[in-house]
Length: 505
Image (cartoon, helix red, strand yellow):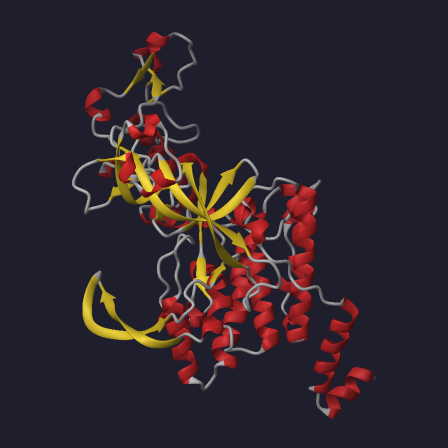
C-alpha cells in the first residue's frame, strides 16, 4: 500500500492512530458474537430463536436511555444491524442469553458486557487505576475468548484491542476518539453535494457550509461589522481572461468601535424562539431540552401539606411543614434522563455514592424552576459474595429511608429480575403496538415469578457507567498458560490428519 501520508515527518502510524472503539468493539466483537449466536449456536432451532426474541422484547430498558428492544428484528435481521442495535444488545446479552448458549460462550459474553461500559467512560478520575482495571479486563476477555475457541483470533480486531490502554493514556477517554459523533456529519455533507454541479464538489460543499454558519450566526444574535460603500469592490477582469468577477465586498478590517458592529433586528430574532421550527432547521435546538421537568400525579387536584407526604415520616422541619407540595410521578434528572417512582438511582452522600429506590418525588407548589425539591429514597445495598448467575450483584433492600435533595440524585440505574433463578417463562401475553397504536395482535411476554424482590443490578449499563463502576463484581481470573494450552489443544484436535501433519512439519 502506497500512501503519501506515511511519509509525513513526525507521524507514527502505530501510535498516532488510536483504537476506534465503534468499529473495533460494537461493530467488531459484539457483532461477531451476536451473529455467531443467531447463525450457529441457535441454527435450525426456531423455538429457541423465538424464545430469545421474547426475552429481548421483555427486557426492561429503564435507565439505559434506549427504547424497548424489538426482539424479532434483532434475531431475524442479525446480519443487518447497526451500531445502535449492538449497543443495546451488549447491555441485555447477559440476561437474555443465560441457558441458551454454551457456558464458555456465555462467560465471554458476560465479560464483554462488563468491558464495554468500562471502555465508554466519559471521564477518568484516576488514570493509573483505570488503566490497570482496563488492561486486566481486556486480558481476561481475550482469555475467555480463547477458552471458548481460539479461532476468533483470526480476526485482527481482537489484536487491535490490546493497544487501547496505551492510546487512552495518550489521548484520553476512548469515547473522545470514537467516530459515532463524526459520522453524523455524513448526511449533511451528502445533502450539500446534491445541490452541486459536480465540477468542484468540495468547493461547493465548503461554500454551502460557510453560508449555513453565517445564517446561524445572524439568527442566533451574532454581531458583524457594518459594511460601508468604501468596502465595495467593483468588478474587475480575471487575470489572463475576459471573465469578470461578480460584485463583492472586501473583507473589512477589525475594529473595537461598538458603533461599527451590528446584529439582526428584532423581526429576525423574534422568529428564533425556544423550540421553534426555525431553530430545529438551523440546528440551534437543544435535543435534551424538556419543557416539563416534573409530571404531577394526575389524581392530585391541588397542592397538599407536607404532613400528607410519605417522606414526612422520615424528615420534617417547620419550614417544610409551612409549605404546600405536589406529588410527582416522574422528574428529569440533571443528566436529562427521566426518573420515575420505583426507579433505582445512584445518590451522592457524605460517605460516597449509594444505591436506592425512589419511593416519592415532591415539588414545592411555589417552585419556579420546574425541578423537584425532595425525593424519598429507600436504601439498597449490593449483596456480598459471588452475586447472581449473570456475574452481576444482587440489590438487597434495607429498612432505611432518606429524604434527599434533588441535586444529590446523580443518575438512574438499570435493574433486572433474576428470571433464570426464578424460572420465569413466556406465559404472559401483551398487545402489539404498531404505528404508536394498540392492535388486536398479541405476542408472548415473560411473566416474572416470585420472589419479585430478587433484583440484579445491570453493571453492563453504558449510560453513566462511571457511577456504576464501584458496584461491579470483578471478572474471574483465568490462568494464562493453562487457558492458552487448552485452547491450542482444542484447535489441534479438530484438525484432520493431513492438517495435523502439516502443522507439525
